[in-house]
Length: 164
Image (cartoon, rainbow, N blue to C red):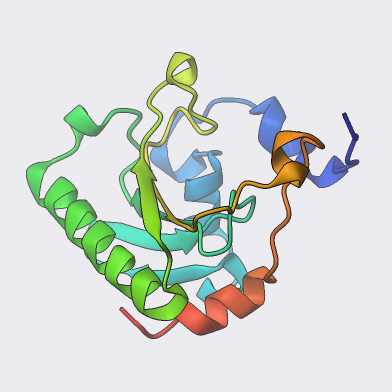
């Protein structure tokens, strides 16, 4: 297996201290919402009333989006109905936009809840939306254990921004 050196991810994977108040939340999603960078710098495509849509900065594939609630909750069953209704509406809108912009052959939509469920950010639930193409998993992924992303995040952002 190839080793890719990425020291900037250390703070993300080590987890850090747990917050004692919502204002001190240290999860990656709350961090994006609370930092001073612009939505474009954070790759936030849209802010709704209860959720926001953001590019995954470690994408599985070009166009990999996430719908994330503003509320810092680990489990979807703890979210209020208006927030989960809006989350699903944004997922539907995102699928429509991705279909229009990228013409994929299919989609993956999913959530991983809890560390045992495979969540990379277990403390803040979110929904992944990924366009998929026939043959998008090739020898690089299956044999070399290396993923190729053919488009820069800024290019993806520019294509999708303003569509919501």
